[in-house]
Amino acid sequence: MELTITTQPAPERYSVSVAGEVDISNANKLRDAIDLALEQPTEEVCLDFEKVAYIDSTGIGVLVGAAHHAAEHGMRFSVVNAQPGVMRVAQLLGVDQEISITPL
Image 1 (spheres, rainbow, N blue to C red):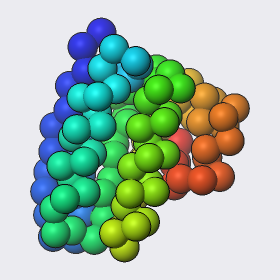
Image 2 (image 1 turned 60 degrees about the horizontal axis):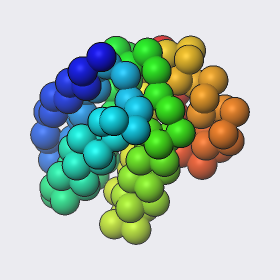
Image 3 (image 1 turned 180 degrees about the vertical axis):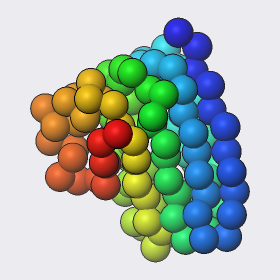
């Protein structure tokens, strides 16, 4: 499934809506979109994962790296509306304790 990413920049929150499956074949596309968001003058980068049914460990690695990058720049980073399968992977890998990720 193709990965679709749309953004809504704002000074207080830069929102990134993601749709599709995040895996090794397209994780770089997600990383690039997050990196662009983290370069903007905003207080928070928020990823909406409502339409992401699957994420693999490569995708989780992108999220963890982005959370660390945001913290280094004094920004908040969060993933919201995570579907049960995405939450399960995050919990199994223990990243739900490391990044702000909330279920759908």
